Amino acid sequence: MRHFCNLMLLGLVAISPLAYATDGPAGLKIATFDVDATPPVGSMMAYDKVLRQDDLPLRCRGIVLLGADEPIVLCALDWIGLANEGHDAFRDALAKAAGTTRERVAAHCLHQHDAPECDLGAERLLKEVNAADPGRFDSTFARQVMERAAAAVRSAIEKAQSVTHVGWGNAEVHEVASNRRVMGSDGQVKAVRYTATKDATLRAEPIGTIDPLVSLISFWNGDRPLAVLSYYACHPQSYYRTGIPNPDFPGIARFIRGQAVPEALHVHFNGAGGNIGAGKFNDGAKENRVALATRLADGMNRAWQATMKREIKPQDVRWHVAPVLLPLAPYLDEGKLRAEVKLGTAASLSAADELSYVLRSKAGQKNELSCLKLGDIRVLHMPGELFVEYQLAAKQMRPDLHVAMAAYGDYGTHYIGTEIAYSQGGYETEPRSSNVAPEVEGVLMEGMRKLLEAK
Image (cartoon, rainbow, N blue to C red; front, side):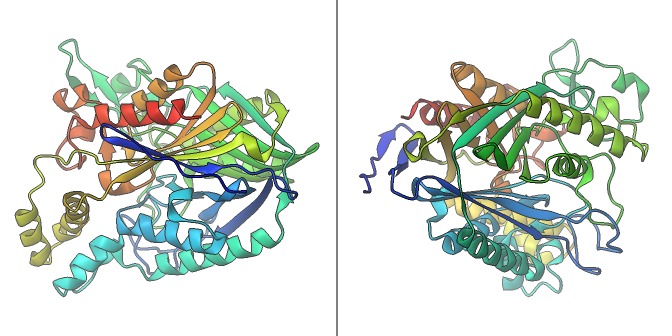
């Protein structure tokens, strides 16, 4: 029995409770899928062409929840980003395979840098001006992965397993995350502590504002774990520009945990890690990749040991969506971007990416924030390279609930800072880095609040 959809228009945010669960005879079920997303030799990644494939493969993996109205799909991809029309197309492919709608699909990247990027809008704009090479926006391989993932979803649904319990656990991760924006006494960013910080003075600066917790959500059939979803906010780089696709330290940590609990599929999501990196604990030495992975895996293990299970039924599951129109950065000029795309230079690729987002924004294309409810657990799905302050704020909004966040959804926004951050300087809020205006904070905070308060 399907209940009505209720649309609430409040300010800039509209919330659609698209899933009102039904407790049918089949109950709640889960299907898990996992496919290789490693680009072939010679293809272009975000920064370099693939030279070799001799590392851990990139994965596209996730879950499909069945039995709570239309299916819900959660997907995590070891790529730098799915942007604009690329994000739409990926979700459409998964939705069609699962027999659901795009609004009920959350697709996120982990943001590794030795990995591909997908923006079908940027590719289209480059083709319109007869660009000789769309570079990193050549979608040939991306479309293959979409087809591969869709086929895996269809196959997984045929083997879906019953879910009787959901688990929640979290633990502090030690010596991995630190804030990238090192502040001076004048309230301005005096330095950015990037992924690999060789400057010992910068590494000695305080950790800064982070969310130290890794959170785990697990799905069970009785005493048997079926899937484990982990959430941790941090840029995932130890070092890159190797020409070798690799999932970096979060992928290694995920692999370690998969070996420890092989019955379950392990799916990792990057939280609001836009202004968070491992720079305080990483000078770029190659051995630090495994060291960071081991520390993250240790936190995941302790969160696993701390997991508390409780029964779950279809009526305990809800899916809410809040479409929001994010304010466009004032320095993005459509005419200038079009002219730059036509030049056919290396900079034309970045201009096509930005123009793709500008055109969507001017057409009123909204970003969809969404929230999965699992009893007293909430998972927020957010766009872009989100600052950690949004994740911390979400947890403060509902201290009575267990709240996790996945960011790096639609990558078209690029960095999303807080309002004050745009006046403080620093790489993340420069015109080359962020496609949204400072007023974005008010829009997103209101959207999160509405989602977390929805029944």
